[in-house]
Length: 282
Image (cartoon, rainbow, N blue to C red; front, side, top):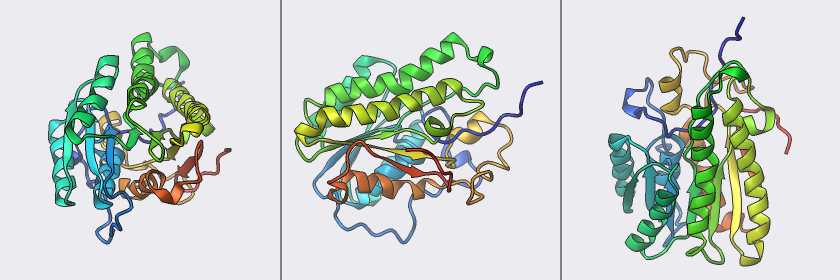
């Protein structure tokens, strides 16, 4: 007998729209006040059309950064992110395409630099997942798509970005709580997130001499469009964590700001755990 499916932890790049969610996710707190922490910076965010990526984009804009977002297919969500960024007084470049393709990973960096003249912050955030209860149910097609989207794209995008990043700039990767405590329904997904954590640590050592910092955020259960688009019943989503509820994207955005700005200038190779109170190993 199969176990009942749990719920995914985060990621928001598979099809689904925020307007269809009830309630709609909170992207940024109404009382959030920027203080110029990213003034004059340019940031590229993959999976920036909704959820965590949108929250990072809007928070960055509030802190003075110009933004480019890469997204797969949700034009309406991407345009809403652009509206929110522009409302914060900054520009938002939309870059539509599939990050499984190496050429597109390189193109989004090239287009960002061509539009803004530089790149200072790269946020690798886009991801996909296909929940299955048993190891035998993981198909070869889904395995390839999950790895190509969730970790291959990080390699390709970073390789191109390093032609433009310099001392004081940074890379931020989105990993997951599943990388630390596993998952009974996301075998391939949690494997990619473990790879992202190791990738973050190794890359940080390689780039330390260049003074390019590399850190990550490991979200727990966050209310993003991927949740209702993946599961029919979401009433109990997030209730298993100590805080007893799902997190909002607004609770993730400030972490990306922290890692992108000088406040974290003595941090590299580290992971911030924003997961509702789950205790995980480093």
